[in-house]
Length: 112
Length: 115
Image 1 (cartoon, chains in turn brown, green):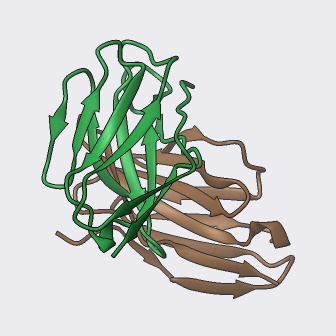
Image 2 (image 1 turned 30 degrees about the vertical axis):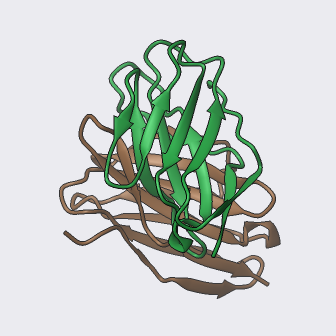
């Protein structure tokens, strides 16, 4: 079975721009979560989607948004980029009662 | 959220066992204990989880204290590929159905494996 796939792997943007990141979960997984990882704050939960509905949200400003499609693929969007948004963005999918999350390799976003 | 405390770093020699401790004194009766690790330049990877009893899988063993206030991840024979940051996590369920779910990562333990 293919793992969690995130595209693109690397992105360079400038302040004020917006960006969309994509995540394809493991086949059959309906839950997709997003995390931000920075050297200063570590790994922080952004939001979780399940069956196209946002079920849980972390403490991030409204510039961070996401959506999930009927095939469980998910996108996250960051508008009006700031320098502090430079980070590794990780997507994870999970399935079943064990609630094990499977992470992708991440998208590294650099904001200049 | 129930919090966990781990040492910032640990060092081991290749082929030797490694015991990574985690304290979670505020754990509730229904909290599972999960361990993930993050190798350099990769996303986190699930290692093992448990509730009350000790658990074994192909990657590691998890020893849970009788009072559940602490646990230890055991790598039986460390290899260079085990060098990573290890996270001990008590997953949060925002409702009893478990559909609202998140992992709260601390700083973890940076494991260095010497050849």
